[in-house]
Length: 327
Image 1 (cartoon, one colour):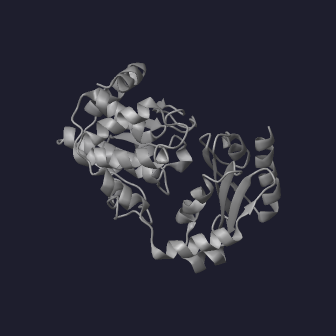
Image 2 (cartoon, rainbow, N blue to C red; image 1 turned 30 degrees about the vertical axis):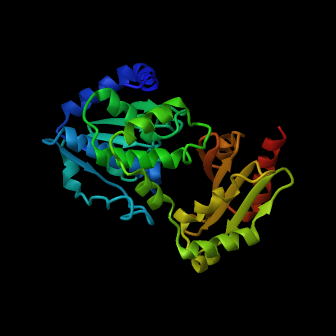
Image 3 (spheres, one colour; image 1 turned 60 degrees about the horizontal axis):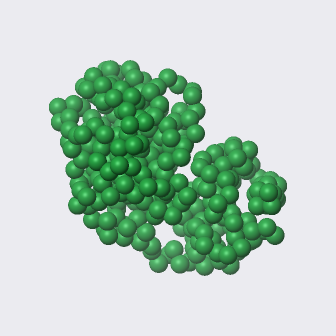
């Protein structure tokens, strides 16, 4: 085993052993993750699902949740439709990439006899579970892959394929500051399973012709504050004209990632259903999750999300980000 993986796994040994005991204990297991899934949520969920199926073929193992509006079925397979009756028996819930009860895609996870959580977001202790949380790790897929390697059970190509997509997605193609030696060690282990990384990258980052129209609009309407906060605002009427929705409105936020003089960048998209504007925030080095928490959100130091109730609040929000840059 790679030394970086061994060192990390030794720290998690007690938790990993508990998870393995729970997996062996239950005949029915369901894998959950957060709603409106991203690469890491789906990649981790499906990677773990196939790992369990491959190693415990006699168990009843399922995964549930909403599909991705763009990458299902291009990159990720459609989620299973499971009747409520399945959840009437004793089962184990394994939740990945979501420790906050309100964010889990299918609320039936709480019906489980016992619950395991693998996450790299700040832990919200609003239900009883075995929580394996590391906010400094790049992706939930990195944490779950580490557990799989520790288990000494087989990791086959399909499981590794999905996990790698999650690792790439939440590490920003290994560019975010959360990427470290352990991240690359996990990537090496997954690539060793003979996955087609060229196929993964092409499916994840292939764009459509209409994306050029969206990018043109953003480049013609973005703003930059005096201290280096770049942002664009998409109202509901504009999103309809551009063929955008809440999920892909933030897909262009990293257009500003490598621009000199821009330290923080945001996408701001109207959500008429929730009567708010949803914001994705990114930064080069500055920790922006404190500001995200202030505006009813949260996340990682350089990648967070939040919301404002009205564009009247936008000036104050940008000012708060400006002040981070000044400090």
